[in-house]
Length: 365
Image (cartoon, rainbow, N blue to C red; front, side):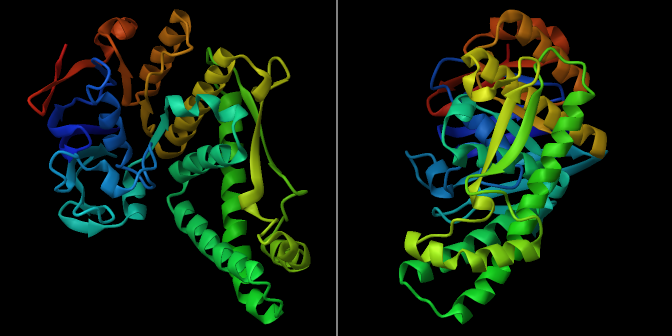
């Protein structure tokens, strides 16, 4: 089992202080708009590598009234072991992590804790720009391979420096070779990790008995096909210099990839599906991600499902709850009222979130 059994938020977002005592079951949070339900989900999302579900900077997570920094304390049960995890930021500085009293980095956190999520901002995933789909895919990749963030950062840093040379119209190839070598090595790692994650999702969907539609996924390039190896990418970057100089930016590489989805049963592109079908496809992929990790690691990740009932009918909501419980996942879900989670019965902890004098109350409904 992978689950938080205790969570405390201090001066985090709207919460001056909030304490949750948990038992590993799914967690359904309900309350009025503005009570801070999504803020709790964001706190849980920080128990994994990356920038969290809002992609916010550490300074933006501080409670504005006091602005004294913030801290999260969690008790994480993973692989029959209990970890004490502290995550905090002071003065807007980058967040710090401590596992069992010892300083740790995000990769170390990712080795013991995996979190995947679906939030309302993703509802337009199939019809928005490619950047959002790359980010969605990279979040999935991170759940399989915490070092993916490091490879992505190395690639982006090298590309920024190469783009600077291009904008300044530097033409000496010696300036480019080192950067393109770094981009080729890191970029190939990024691409291969993405392809591996897509394959894992496809297998998990094919093997599943689920009420949600399967999505066929394809990774394409806006400028032709992605070079197939590190050497191919290095060569492609070198050959593209003249064109890149004219554009002032790098036009080949994994930063130009796009994730294309197809509703398998109907043979229809995801972007052409109805709003409800697009939501169902996203839910299907998140569940496939959880199943693939459960098969590999012996336990599913924690799932964050913010306002998940939106665009899902009552039957699909009930089916979703059944699949979550069947997986044994600690899913964190939000809604405005307890009736939205009635189909869960006693299979979940249903908690009300209210605010009283700046102190958040999270109690059993």
